[in-house]
Image 1 (cartoon, chains in turn brown, orange):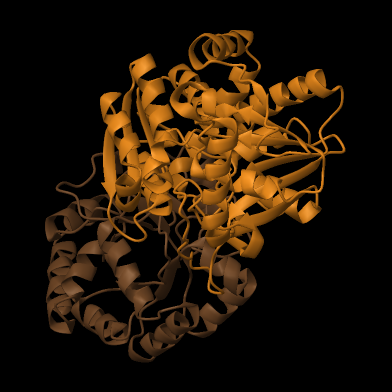
Image 2 (cartoon, each protein chain N blue to C red):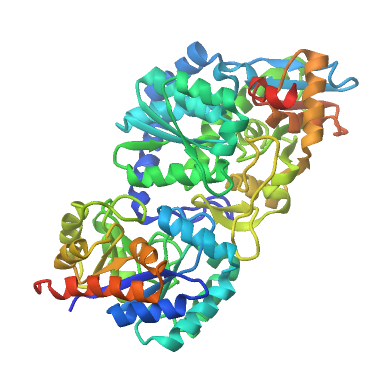
Amino acid sequence: MKRLAIYLMCRRDTPELAEAAVEGGADLVELGFPFSDPLADGPVVRAAAERALAEGMRTRACLDCLARTRERVDVPLVPMTYASLLEAYGWDRFEADARSAGADSLIVADLPVDAHEELRRVQLVAPTSAGERIRLAAERTEGWLYLVTVTGTTGARDDLSPTLAGLVERVRALTDVPLHAGFGISTPAQARAAAELTDGVVVGSAALLAAEGGPDALRDYVASLRSALDATVAV
Amino acid sequence: MLTYGEYGGRYVPETLIPALDELEAGWRAALADDAFRAELHHLLTTYAGRPTPLTLADRFAPGKRLYLKREDLLHTGAHKLNNALGQGVLARRLGKRRIVAETGAGQHGVATATVCARFGLDCVVYMGAEDMRRQRPNVERMHLLGAEVRPVDFGTKTLKEATSEAIRDWITNVQTTHYLIGSCVGPHPYPELVAELQSVIGREAREQVLAAEGRLPDAVVACVGGGSNAIGIFSGFVDDEVRLVGVEAAGAASLGTGRPAVLHGARSSVLADEDGQVLDTHSISAGLDYPGVGPEHAHLRDTGRAEYVGATDDEALGAAHRLARTEGILPALEPAHALAHSLELGEELVVVCLSGRGDKDLAHLA
């Protein structure tokens, strides 16, 4: 079965939204810990981060949000954030506190594979990544490898990136770790097309937009992605 | 891998790492290539107007031997062109036909637009909407030079957000585009590359002050936003017994009151809160209105080799008016911060980097 990861920003109502996403068929929830200057993110995630910060969602509040989400769902939870938060909180302490609050791993969007090797996390590879760095990322990643489908920031695109197929081929030649494709995937058709090449997909910006309509709207949206993934032919 | 003691490094999405590797390799090859150095030297002398003079300002600072390094006389009106020309030649060597840049006061945007016009490259400049309002003449200059100026209309609407948007553009168009960063900030190798291209200021100033006075200055003073004019002039004196003083805007004192944090690809001293969230800054000078600073400055501060102080908006305005009335030189608001502090120094022989001219600031100065 193809895996479906849904990204939500840590806010007051996030535990309830995460539960709805899981009911809709999410296998994993990424929880955004907002940063003031998120270089890897497009307008939707950036605006969600601005709103979360304005509501006071600082690191401790996000860890609390993670713990409250953990109480409601059983799927893996993975905080996704930026290096400045870990720098301020303490790298080891951040990892320890996140894991004891229920995190299964971490994603740090502005931390390349050769920085802070000691921090166990999900590594990202991009269409620009070449052999040696892909090998390193696969070796060091925790659980699965995050394939960035586009050269660009997070956010919906009209079409699935044509670079994904080539990237999957390059990565598959080097490793057997599960591959999840993310960035630019918003529609069930795109999710299905990406999942036909990989082990699963990550949907962020479009999930945040759906979540603005509340838990029911998010559940329905995630269910539409789930159906599309379940219709993929096994590869 | 940190570059300057505890500071520097590459805190960027993985997408950019191959481009930074390519840039670093291209930069090392260029530095080792006499043809690159000759081309840059030719452009700096026949197009940009180097060397710039060293002017004694004895009516501005009676009782002192205070010299101004006249980067305001460089083509386009500020030191930014030294860097833009160097990176322009480098971008051409790397086969990049599209340039993106950020700008605060607009001086770096104008310098970049100028180089792109001269070399026939496409040019996109990101500028905060607030800065476009307060530095209108430079927006018009960029348009005349054929650049596209893209307003950044979120967050502080100033240099911090403009820099983030320029980096996002670069992530998106990395195969075709060179990011022509304007200061000694950003991921490795940018801080080092910009410092090298601005070191011409320090080399000239050292020779000129020796020729004029027969000795090295007691102190060298420069304003610090990101810190490129300061790192450029400091580099000429860093191995000598010369006091190095950087002057920040009091409302944007990244070195004075900042803490270690990660911003725009590097670990440095940043105005950030205890959670690592970057704070808003407030300065009358758009070029200093930035919560980060080059990592080399953070290192020079920690090692004690350079010291960093603040000047207020009013002190800078006062110094700008005084220089205009006593020397007939209208400085930009950014180096006016350095001028203000230079009068408070006890040293007799002082060199101040006059990094740009004040035409862009008439709305504040007049």
